[in-house]
Image 1 (cartoon, rainbow, N blue to C red):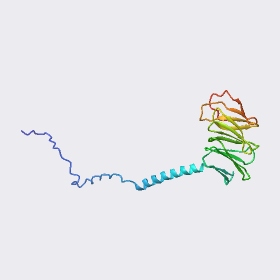
Image 2 (image 1 turned 180 degrees about the vertical axis):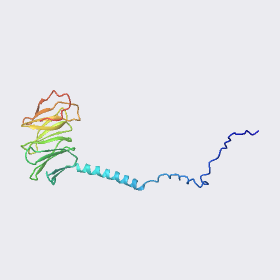
Image 3 (image 1 turned 135 degrees about the vertical axis):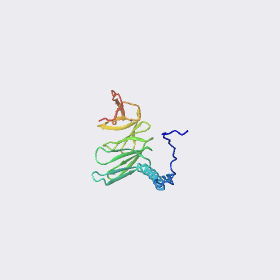
Image 4 (image 1 turned 120 degrees about the vertical axis):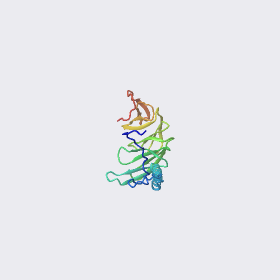
Length: 210
């Protein structure tokens, strides 16, 4: 028996998307991203440029370059057969000394003259004294004093590797390398080559002295 007054709701299926005049076309599926050839090529070139930059930087490190300030024009190129690890000016004038990781030391005079010295290991630090002597400390903890005629005047065994030499008169303050454990600076007498004092009292690494 049919019930009177009852609301009867009949489920209606949604119209087919293609048959309804009001419905827009379904969104097209997004295609898989195709390889971006230009981006990939640029990435390859970027890697190549990076490698080339590092190679140029490595080769450039074989040369100590002296430029004038102001202006920045090239004055001199001091070339080593291995990467340069130390450079220092003479106290007066424009003479300089440079050292490399193969133990080579070059003294370049402002008049164009030069002389070569050799240590047993890579040079950590070098200093050119006013009288023409050269002091150099290497990676094997040897501090050598060379005469103006290139003779080895002294060969001291240091307790640590040295990263800096500060001169005052006939004495040098040798700062231990920051690569080693903290150690006190050393005072070296270059007139009578020997270690004359250890500057005790610091609680950490000493990075500067005058």
